[in-house]
Image (cartoon, rainbow, N blue to C red; front, side, top):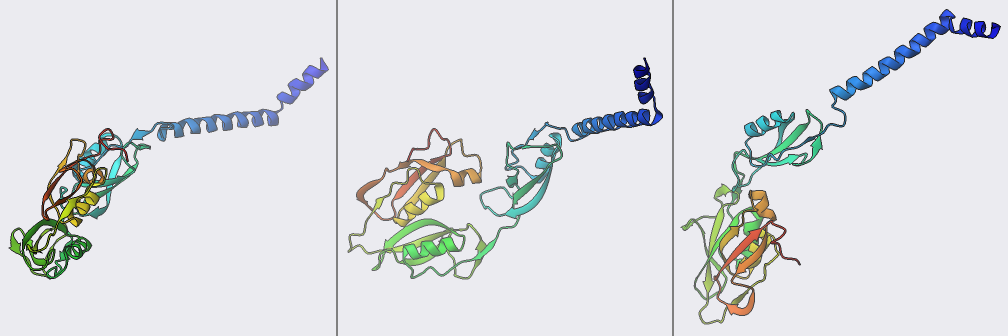
Length: 266
């Protein structure tokens, strides 16, 4: 009986009682704060980042707002074959999981193209001219062969069938055609290289280095934008690769894809 009274007296002491109340209040506050933070930060709730590729900034902002995100343009690059001002890259990437309110950094295609200087290609060999064209950010167009004493010597440089002088400022990715010599007294010939499985630009370069022309580039439905085209690989070529001699300037057509089922195994 006295032991029960002692326990009751201990628990009933005002210091102990207040201490217990304080402990209970702290526990309640901690639990409440955790629940509140879970609600505010949407604990364990993640959103999937949309694909903003090729959208305008306004379109990307609208889509981001609908899914609880925000976008910000942080950089710009220039690609001639892509719509100006369109989204070219993003971080985080499409499909990534993020919290609501996350900022998505966008890289867009610049409105104004980069300007480059046209080099003097006359007198160079075809391969030297090709290297110079690439180094300036230009694009090789047609190889036009005419009779001359020196085979594969650059005689003229053209832009859209008109002579273009060295030193002229043009947009990057401008196409430059070359008029090249072909000595009829020599047995100048080449062969069609095997570019199956090679990426777009690598395959085009390989064809050009054999003094052949690209007749057409045909991308299948899997290639949706310019970046896709850069990653596309050749799954068919016409004519097929052959060591049988071919005439300089002959045409080659390339068929490209990013569809894994069409990409040939190496």
